[in-house]
Length: 300
Image 1 (cartoon, rainbow, N blue to C red):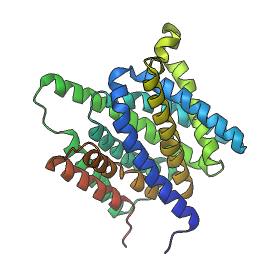
Image 2 (cartoon, helix red, strand yellow; image 1 turned 60 degrees about the horizontal axis):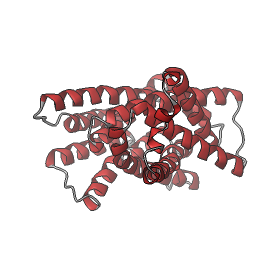
Image 3 (cartoon, rainbow, N blue to C red; image 1 turned 180 degrees about the horizontal axis):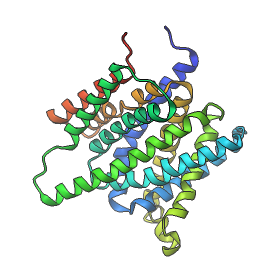
Image 4 (cartoon, one colour; image 1 turned 180 degrees about the vertical axis):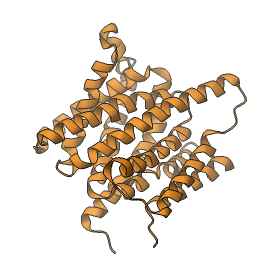
């Protein structure tokens, strides 16, 4: 059956979000290695909230209901305050390709949570897809290391990454119902607001000067412009488009399309950085993508 206009919107939004996250992971990696993770998440979140707030006011987007408001705030606490912070921690210790593969596993965790908490029913093809995706991700993340320090850093990064994907999966799951009653742009704004509020509550901001928290913007004007530009791109291309996709397509289809990030990473690193992925990563990526495809392929 041919997808409706709404479904096509969701499909293209999900693909756009996947491409944006892949680009963001590559561009933000130097920032993650240079600045503390919480500082980076806070600064990026504040900038995103300002841009989203201005956009919501200009477009006069409708406000959510009271229940949707609190749900979106909680979703922001989990998905931005917790998940984003640990994402940057993981990004500083793992390669950009590995962290994207770890995020791929997060798509599977989301499906499992949808079954457990939203009552969605999976058929055997989808369970087989979960198995393949897990195997493919494991192949990528267990690449051999020749240094004990590197090995330790990889395990630490893996733990941070797992915390991030669990928080993000929980955030998406609880936001699904709220999106049915809320404009996607408005939902993105209130999720972001919840995330920024959680950074004030969950981290000792009062023990650090504002210069430290805004350090990514105070190095040089070139760094400030680059950071602001990538923040705007990730805000609308990553956060907003992913919620837009979730609003207009099913959870399974959205997750499948968002999980094409590894393909965009391979393409970008090959074309723009002249990096050829080794056979192990290609094999792991292939298995993972095939697994995610099985998740939403229903052949009776």
